[in-house]
Image (cartoon, rainbow, N blue to C red):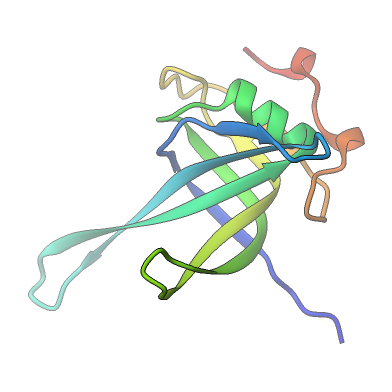
Length: 141
C-alpha cells in the first residue's frame, strides 16, 4: 500500500541559501524558513508561535534557489519530510527533520518587493525534474 509524505509551508527565509556539491558533483542547497501563527491564549492575550524548518533542494532546483532566493524573502516550499538520526559529540542520539523540496515558489522579489514571484521545481521525487523547472529567462525580475 502506498503512503503519503507531503509538507507545504509558507514563510520567511531565515538564512541565505548555502549550496554545496556531493562527491559525485550533484548540487544541493539548504536554507531555513520560519512560519508563524497567531492565537489567543487561555487568558485572552494574543500570542505568536514561530516554527523553523530546514529545507534541502537538489539538482537544478538547488542551483535556482541558491541564485535567486535570499534571507528575508517569502517563499512557498513543497516537498517531503525526511528525518535524520545521528550521534552527537556527547554520545547522545540526536534527531533532525528537514523538508526535501520538490517545488519552491518565490512569493516576492529580493529586497522585500511584494510584486510577482517565480516558481521552480514541480517534480514529485526527491529532486525536481529539470525539464519542468523554469529558466532564468522566465523570471519576472
